[in-house]
Length: 186
Ligand code: NI
Image 1: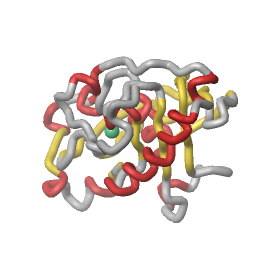
Image 2 (image 1 turned 45 degrees about the vertical axis):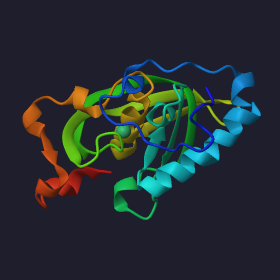
Image 3 (image 1 turned 180 degrees about the vertical axis):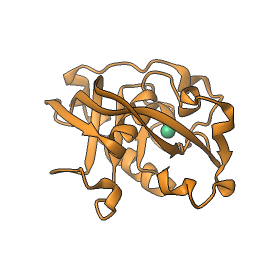
């Protein structure tokens, strides 16, 4: 699990087979291990340097069920957030609460330069283990629901391009119109 952790922060891109694996669940003991605990700040660092709002461990070549998500709370797109805007998520399960679909122009650090309009259910329950290996259960909706679904897809070998209704909904980001960019996830 550690080969890529020390110095190699390369973000894998679409086509790399590791992105297509179902990532390994961790035991509570593994989550609390030094190795995994030290990976968490590295994940934040890599994500911040790349300018993302989420990163899943498989994207840096580590096929374990870990994703980090951080939203800037000063945007009105995120006004449903309650006590926290940072999430460290191990071994998640998702349950759709509201099937009604909502669409955003999604981007992905593993698919640089492109955007895709993806519709996903607007409200979900997420169960996971946090960085202390404690059980968590949260309700996510609206923009945050899409962010969670995008990141957690990475743990199951899926990318947003798999969720497109049509390849016509896939564009280069410098071709996005102002109107489209109102629903931007980056
Ligand atoms: Ni992504």
